[in-house]
Structures are given as structure tokens and as C-alpha cells.
Length: 213
Ligand code: AMP
Image (cartoon, rainbow, N blue to C red; front, side):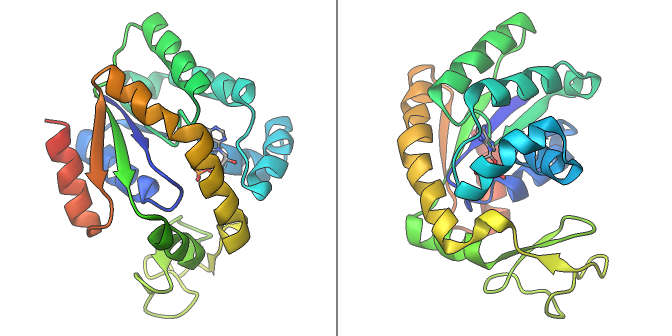
């Protein structure tokens, strides 16, 4: 199974990707997570990505395509994969088609989790993540039992630097301009599946599974 998950920032791609990975036993490839790890480690890639991420802009296509190409050649991808947050531009989508062709693979679906803008801002600005285990919370919609503390492992919760309201507005503008054209791209090749992302996590998950039948 080879799937891609698209959708605006705050649509719940990461949450749904985690569930799909468990359900289908496939690899989770999140370019956002890869960039965040590189920033934390202070690598050359991290240095290139950090300024773009903080401004809510996309990391340049050549850099992003390079890391995905390398990642897809790893052994764990042989069991299938979900691409979470890639592609985000038409150039990336075209590059992905080439990479898949070289690997003799084809996509099952391009799933778009659709959520209206006001809700996206509320979700992203309220998002909190555990420093230790990565579990996600929301100060409005999914509060931890004790403020600032992870229910799962007791770790400290933090807010992503790019989840501020100002950066979020930039990320949404970037999404409309650079990523929305992908809807037509995947409609044209028959892979596009639109999912109502306003529903509960469980309901969205069920809808995605039904779309993958
Ligand atoms: P995410 O965690 O998917 O919301 O990504 C966080 C940030 O990482 C984005 O706002 C971009 O700056 C960068 N990023 C993630 N995926 C991509 C991509 N496919 N192309 C360019 N930049 C990306």
C-alpha cells in the first residue's frame, strides 16, 4: 500500500498517518518530522530548513525531493509507505511520479483531509506536543489531564515554533498558492480522495479506510 496524505496545516495529517501506519503496517514518511529532526541535530539539512520553517515557507523543492528520494530507497519502505506532507508542490508531485516509476511502484490514493480555515487556525495554535514521546494534545479540543504534562509518559508538553497564529497564516497562504494545485493534479490521474476532516479522529479514520477500499 502506497498512499499520500495531503491537506492544510492543522488538518490532522500526522494523527491519521500514525493510525494508518498501525493499521497497514507501513512506513511513515513525514517530511516535516524529518526536517524537525535535522534542525534538532543541527545538520546541514537542518540549517537549510530552519529559516523556511520558522517563516512558514516551504523548504526548497530540490532539498525536499532529495531527502524523499533517499528515504524511499530504505528497506522499511518495501512494506509500503504513507507520505505525510509530501508532495506540497506540483514540482514535487512530478518528481514523486518519477521516483515511483524508477522503483516500479504506484500510488493507491492521494487523500486530502479537508478542513475550513477558521478551524485550522484554532487547531494549530492550540496544539501541544510531548517532548518525550511525541503524543499530541490540544488545549481546547484534547486537553491533557494535567496541564502541560503528557498523559502517556509524563513528559513535558511544548508548542511547535511554527504553530503561532502569524506563522500559521503564512503556512495557510503557502498552502493555497503552492499545494492546492495538487488537487487538480491528482484529480486528473484519478487518485484524488477528499475526506471531511471536521469530524472526530475516529470518523475521519473510518472515512479514509473506506476511501482506500
Ligand atoms: P509539517 O510538519 O508537515 O506541517 O511541516 C512543517 C514545515 O516543514 C512546513 O511548514 C515546511 O516549512 C516544511 N516542509 C514539510 N514538508 C515539506 C515539503 N514537502 N516541501 C517543502 N517544505 C516542507
